[in-house]
Length: 262
Image 1 (tube, one colour):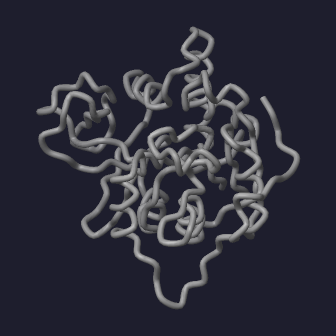
Image 2 (cartoon, rainbow, N blue to C red):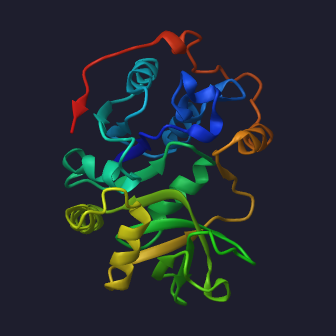
C-alpha cells in the first residue's frame, strides 16, 4: 500500500508566505502542513510515499530528507499550465498495481479519517463532509442509499447533494487502473487543466464502484487555501505538549536531489 500526495501547486492565495515555500511546507503551529499529513499517515502501513511536486520542488525534496520513510518524488514540470488531474496521472507508473491513498498537500486531517477509509467498501473511496445549504460553487456529491456515488459536479442541485469531497481518497489496485485510464482519456481529449474530481465523476456515471465515506462526528480536517484557513487550522490542530516538532529550522535553504521528471 502506498500514499500519493499532490503538492505541485503555487499556493498564490497564501502569498507572501508562499513566495519562498511551497504551500505544503507552510507551518501550522510549528509543523509544516506536509508534516501533519505524514504524521497522520503513520497509523496506516505504507511501503512508499509518492509526492508529485512542481513549484519550488527542491524544497519538498529537502523536507523529505528530514523524515523517516521511503519517498519517491515525481516532478510536474507543467505545474503552471496543468490541473491536479494531470499531476495525479504523472504518478501512474509509481502506483501501478498498488492500493493507495491520494491526499491533497494542503489538507490537515485526523488519522482516524485515513484508517476509516481502509475499512470502507469500494474500489475508489472518497471522504465526504456532510453539508446542508451547499452553494453553487461547491463541488457537490450525489449518492444512493448504499453510499455509492452517482455523480460529482458543481451543477448538482443542492437539495440532492449529500456533501462535498474533502481531498483524501483511497483506491484499490483495480480502482487505480480505472482511475488512471479515465485520467489518460481526459488528458488525451485536451483536458490538461482538468481536475481529478471529474475523473471520479466519470467513473461514477459509468457505474464503477465509487463510494462515499462520511467524516464522522468528532473527526477534524481542514483544507488550507488562505490566511483565514491557516488561522482556523492553528486553532483546530494545536501543538501538543511533549511532541517534538519534526521541522528543520533551515528548511528555507534546503535543496535536494534527484527527481523523476515527466
